[in-house]
Image (cartoon, rainbow, N blue to C red):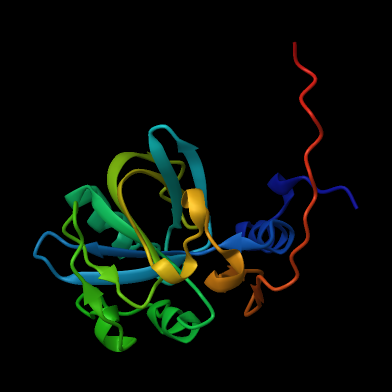
Length: 207
C-alpha cells in the first residue's frame, strides 16, 4: 500500500508512526510550574541529540482531550528547567500512573507514590527510584503546530547527570543488563531490553 499522509486523519497517521517507529525510549519528565508545584509525565517521542553540548530532545503533543498544551511544555517554557528520568521495569507501574491526564494541580509524585529527590543544578526534583536522571536547562522550543495532532520539540542542555552505581561500568558506560530499561511500542504495548546481540560496525572508508 502506498500512503499519502495528507489523505489521512492525524490519528491514522499517528497509528502508523508509533507502530513503525519502535521501540521508543521513554523520557519521564519532572518539572515545576511557576508556583513551584510538581509535575511528572512520560513521553516516548524522545531521543539523544549530541554530546557537545550534551543535548536531548523531548516532543510533546497537543493534548487530544481538550486541545490544550501539556503541563510539561507549559512548565518548561515558564521555568526553563526539567529533569529526564529513565524508566525501568521496576518503575513501569508508577510511570503508567503518572501518564494519567490529571488536573494541573495534581502532584504525580504523590499519585504514583514516588520519592522526589533534590536536583543539583536545576529546581525540578528527580525521581529517586529511577537509576539515571538528566538535569536539563532549556535550549529552545520549536512548535510545529498548536492544533490537535500537532506538537512541540523541546531541546534541553544536560547540565548534571545522576547514575546509580549499580548500572555504571568502567569508562562511563551503562550496564544495559542491570538497567532493565523499558521501551514504548504502540497502544498498550511496551518492550523489555532482554534480547541483546552485538554487531560490529564496518571500518571507516574515509581517507
